[in-house]
Amino acid sequence: MQKALASLQQDLSTIRTGRASPALVENLVIPAYNNTQFLKLQEMATITTDGPRMIIISPFDPSVIRDIEHGINSANLGYTASPDSSILRINLPSLTEERRNEYIKMAHTKIEGGKVMVRQVRHEAMNDVKLKFEAKGMSEDEKKMLEKKIQDLTDEIIAEIEMLGEKKEEELRQI
Image (cartoon, rainbow, N blue to C red; front, side, top):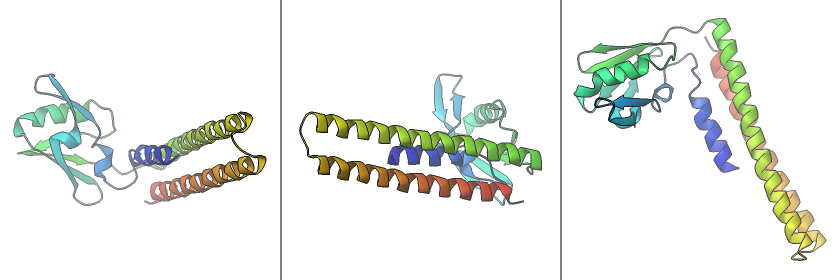
């Protein structure tokens, strides 16, 4: 369940809010060195922000600056990278109300997917308990106690997921 929660957090961080964040681009896979290597952007450069609308990318190897620029621009993220001597700048446009609503819907979809993953883990754990009980490896009381612990953990993780969703929606609604 913790893995599902971590996966959801990673997924939600890729949804753009009104502010610049390195998470928007750090996991982009960039074909570099004449397409002989495919690397994540965070493996190729330092990614920082400069104010609420600017991402600055400083490649470790200046010879790949064009590869990074092309990779970002061809990723269809809704913004373009422009070279500025040895760095790339990405100026993020303001979000329109329509775009904010699209991102909120996307966040809700990802949150629901996270809840489904947690429920699937709960279902598998409940099946394991049932199999142990049927194999006469535990008493009825032990079975009920384990099922209650599994359900409590599930409820706790679902509550965390809902808090993540509320926080993300709040970020998206800020202008």
